[in-house]
Length: 239
Image 1 (cartoon, one colour):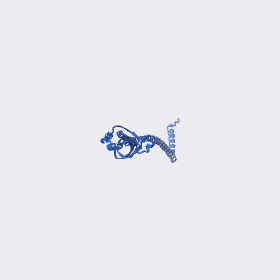
Image 2: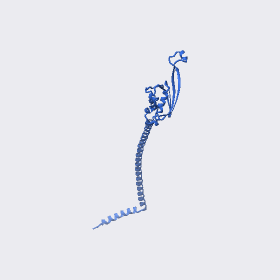
Image 3: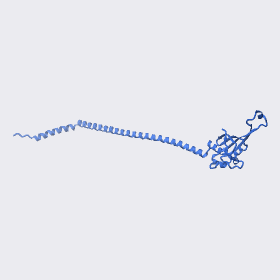
């Protein structure tokens, strides 16, 4: 009988294949090839990761940039609105300051005319032609058919608690032929004449000095020759 040892033959075959593979792997060329493949793979992987991480960082930076630009735009709009509000507030403050200044000083034309009206109403036979204000100086021009009326009016201005001060009065007498006179009577020395008096009053106007003072009461301080002697209110102003 013939006996065949199959186990030994299989072992020998396997050991031969393994030896062949080992010889191939163990050769310098094979090792160099495997190392090259591994290096190439790692390089590609590293480059890929770098590209991906760079793209992610770029996307994140772009997102942050857009967010900052949005915030900057909103901030710019807020700053512009703030400047507009500050400009409006400045204008309002300027108006309030001007109104307070006018109220405190009362140096406007309406205040001057009001102060004069209160005193002219106490003097009869007085007519104003012009009232001119230059800074704190007033020049009042008018006429009167009573020689004492300009003086009494000047007294009412003088006794005003400091509202009017440094008064100077100039009076000029003027004679005119009575209306309706004939030409012959006009040339006659005995022709009836109409006498009037032109006056100019110059004074300083200081509204701050008279704050808290009743101008009507102050104007009534002169004696019998003052405004109390002519209680009839009469105001006729020529413009």
